Length: 378
Image (cartoon, rainbow, N blue to C red; front, side, top):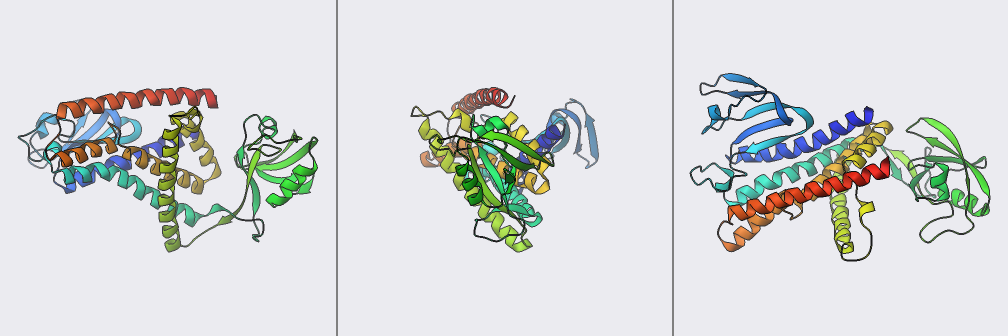
């Protein structure tokens, strides 16, 4: 239940902030929105102002669009499915609307670009705010063996599949306390202990923060390490808990956000390149189920961790939406670029058809990734 609630709150925040960006910039540029919804339909309750400026309420699926037609009024609705929200900008999905000068399709390319890009920009701004709060609360930071920190600890950053560590039950985030009763507080000590016990059984004492308890795991050390792995099959990081001041946190948050944007773009470039080779790429991608599982894990670690993880997801959502693929904001921006180069609007039917095809392809990809996640996690 904790995982479900955390996932709903995190995903809801990301989507709502994205749609809020579209809504605010459209409103600022004189483009009315017919409805701004918290959550997805069916509608529970909605409110709007009538022609006399009086607040009106509507319940369920009662149709009220006729009452606000040809007006700049917006319906604010609360909907049943609590996964973010949506905005219905006037004329955004219409093929033609030549009679309405305020319609989205009749705006200049620059205005349409600002409205489309606003959702992505809001996701990046949200990431900076969340990273900033996380840095102020305090987060573990990677430090070297030669650096002196009172609370430094050696943690497992990655467990190789089917390795001795994986078979013994080690998990990402486990803090290594001791090997064969010898205390470990540096990565070099861990590596030396493992090297001295090649081919032998060892006991490793760890602290698992998600379960708030110490655990002793027995495992065997390999004689030889496979390519790209250590003798035990783990990657390690030495961390220390660090807090930052208000202004320093903001600067670090900006750096973290833009570094993450670059890292995601490089990853996507590598992913696309591998599509033209024999390398497998599906294992590197996760979907809603995987995100839900990881959200639950972060929630157990504490507020700073969930803030950091939400910021990471927000940047991912922003970058993905910028891709020049039909149905995404980036795809629509790409069509705007073509329109600007041609000097005249594109055929709305062709653009609408491309967006529809892109939408169904994205849905198909999401279903595929979801089944992959179910197989991996369950």
